[in-house]
Length: 129
Image 1 (cartoon, rainbow, N blue to C red):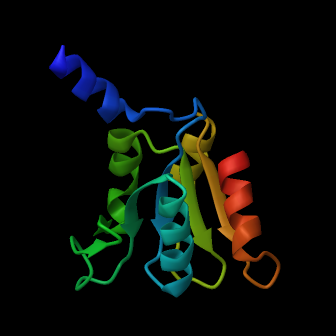
Image 2: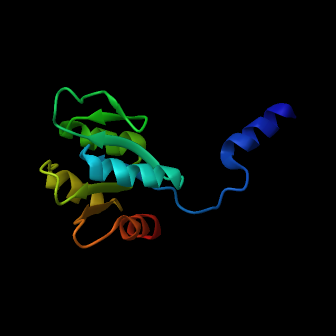
């Protein structure tokens, strides 16, 4: 009986039945950090960050690992990612063919321009889409 109660509590007592967003961020700059942190505080699952700098590889940001762009496809499949977020200001780009192929399977991708959308609008687009 106690094991059942522990299991029930781990699943999340009182959680809503909303779709869980499993998010990868392209970039590790301040904009990515700020938005990812805000999403984590709202209970969204940030699973990884993508960056091409070798000194960042396999380090942690907000408790999640940083990977190379070449690892994106495997990460999407392994973690069942359904959302990719990037910023127009970030010079790092991922292979558009990979993103296009996964978008056909339901993956959502966002490239935000901070001159047009504030952080609350960005969060709203991600969690309500």
